[in-house]
Image (cartoon, rainbow, N blue to C red; front, top):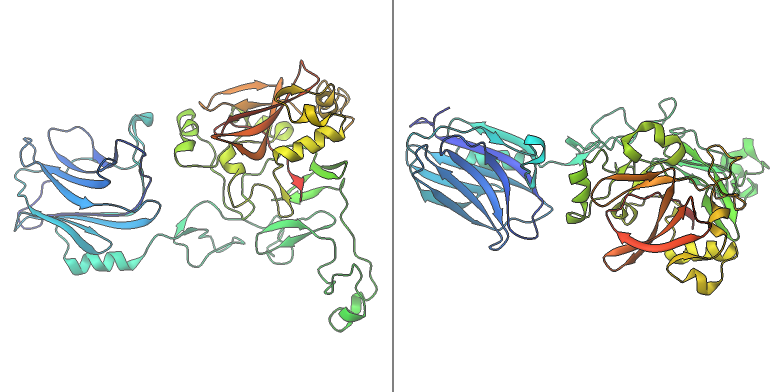
Length: 448
């Protein structure tokens, strides 16, 4: 509605800015209605946010702000129009940063837009929380109270979840729940033999000794007797490569190849090692833009759940490189050199392994699943690696090559790209090459 002479107008919100590398970017804008304007935008050349207002007839244009916002940090923003004095103010984190005498006559509050609208035609470079609009001008004391009231703290806000955070006031989708029962500490997930539940990271981890084996010698013995008398003398199970390993509720097959222990199937988790969600369901344009924010992302090929069981998920390299870890504790995404070790174990020469494009002779055939396997491919699978043709999501967000190719990320960068391995239906060798970080590839984990 209109701005009353007595009341004025106030807009307040918490913002997390994703600042562009160049040009201008909208933070808050309005739909094109007459000449009304009440907007915020970021200008890279001056590194400032512009707070702009304008009357219905186009008069009264005012650009108020010399504020240089911090990136990757929550800030509290309040814009005020004081109708009695005609003063426009901008407050950041409870403090006044700019004011100008700029009477608004005949101003009608336009329809504002925050976030993405019109199928991606307009995008805000800002995350919002605690948005409020008042048909009056708030006092400086009220603005300070709003700032001090509650800074957004992302996390799990569900008290029934294993990783509920009392400090969190904004749910970020990271909640983790026990796979059976309601005991997050001692039975939060059905861990496979040789693995135990780590309540701190809410995941099953490989353990070479029982939790009751306090001295870590593989046997519950004399030194443990005072606490574990009822279990005295019990031998502790030791996990061996070839046994399944549980990660975020799923048992992954493993295989020993030379001195390395590998996952024998593709990673499928939607969570980082610490339980944080890996962004998914990204559109083609959103996937293509992940380089601008180094955003890790995952997807099922063609976004078709039927492809999950056989091929797992595809991840961009930003997810591979994230410090929160893509693989479970004690495992990691293999480096380019560790892939070379695998290839040489299967008969590839050192000079071939360090080459680019298709190398070796039949190492690809050894790594691909056979016609007798289920799911099957056209290899021999003599390695037990069980490679499957899970396809790719290209940097532009499009899906291709399901049932004919598989790409595996390595953890090794190569300039603005990263090294990968490729297996191909019509080739018995293994391709070594590098690709844009936005590529959606399969991932295997190897034990530390």
